[in-house]
Image (cartoon, rainbow, N blue to C red; front, side, top):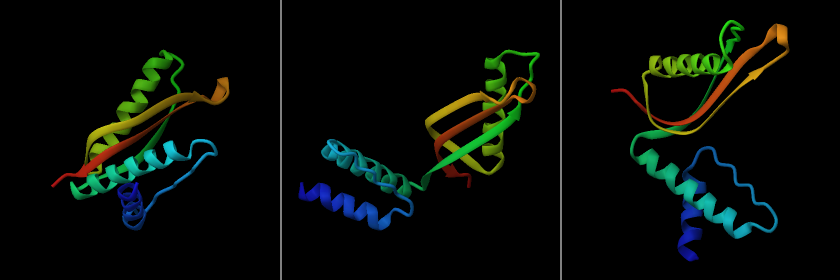
Length: 119
């Protein structure tokens, strides 16, 4: 237990942006998860990697399917990331959805990724 508290304390001191949210009744599990996330952040930082969130939005094309629109949104988002001289080493989460009214639909896609800077 002392080692876990040391890791959490170290992580909180070194991580620039960290949110710890503990739900009643799940304190131990949430604490362990927070420790794991903090450890991963420190490990990635030492390897020259960092977690980043990206999002992209495109106009909806009614002439093609939702799946094709979503694929185009993700493709454009990955092109933007590549153009920013970053390399994705791991995709942590991704989501996409078609939003808006029938006349003004758009496609929104987001991704949380681990990136490294191209050298």
